[in-house]
Image 1: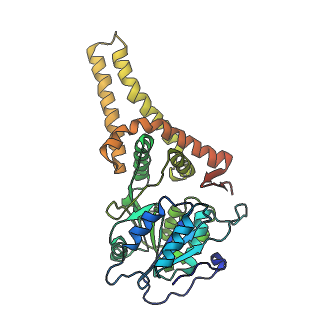
Image 2 (image 1 turned 90 degrees about the horizontal axis):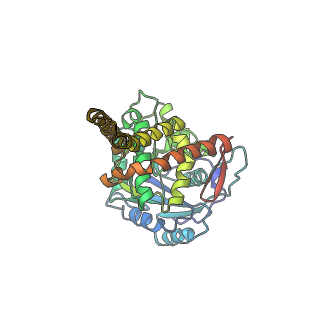
Length: 366
């Protein structure tokens, strides 16, 4: 199957699913020439006896108006493998009342031509481990869930990524407790769009990505809608399944978290204030203890014990991020940047009502 383009697939009705196609992978890509080859290689290595590309699963590559070599890379893959479809996402109307953002538009377009009983939405910056796909299907069916989502192992580079990313992911682990997310009696829901496996009927019953419009936190919203519909969801950290390099530059990282933090964190300004207190205590207490000569020994001891307690509390929290020990250790130096991004994200979402991602600006005030 090699269908290069479809006529406005975002407007098509849900297609009939032929028997035998177990999984459709939908991979949206916008200017991903640096990441796409490794992602494709990891996906194409997934075929195994009884789980073959083109027969049991398919890959739908959705080019989201890329200006680099992304489309060429995707076209070469589609020409070489009969189980791959290349699709160009429909044009965007960024200013319409019911418009979709780029990723939602691309994912919805891919879903319209998908034939699998399960739909897997994954990103071009992911690398999948051998047999990841078949194992995830078995896991979803074993736990009787309509949605299974993985949080990948994060690959970071450079000082600022290594210092900041553990802070962000430790807060995410605190806010989105997997125990509560996976509990059908709790309202809390979460998912990660880098690996979002959803049962076909459940996906279309909630309107899929089309229902998310310009929502830039579509993964969490989809999980929330499915759980609200009394279907089970499962979310977990899965370093054995896949890894991802979310950001290749510090600028991309700043833009990415500015887009998301105000939506991900329930009280971002409150969180920023707590991180300011961390800085004050972390660096201020030793200065007080050793910078005031009139303090006697027991007073200095009390201050330093308070400092040790501050360190313990801070690093115990950051350790939830599942990052390497060295990255966790230097995370204290990422706190000022984290505070800045929290405040900037709130300003962009709640005051400016606009966020920018991959060369597109989205109105968040609608």
